[in-house]
Length: 73
Image (cartoon, rainbow, N blue to C red):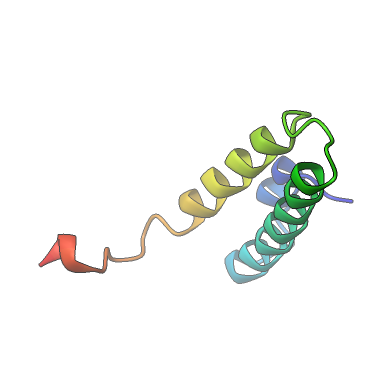
């Protein structure tokens, strides 16, 4: 399983492919966090850090997207 740094540094992946891979990781990490919360496991076993790393990587790849929403009016 690839991690965030592997995906970001993989020159063979396009930006779109990197985003897709990161979104899949994000979905898996959120599922693990939900399972930990619902199952009484320790929710601070690194999953929160992984989520933040993935979200930061996605933000980095989308940095050239224009801002949208009410705050940009």
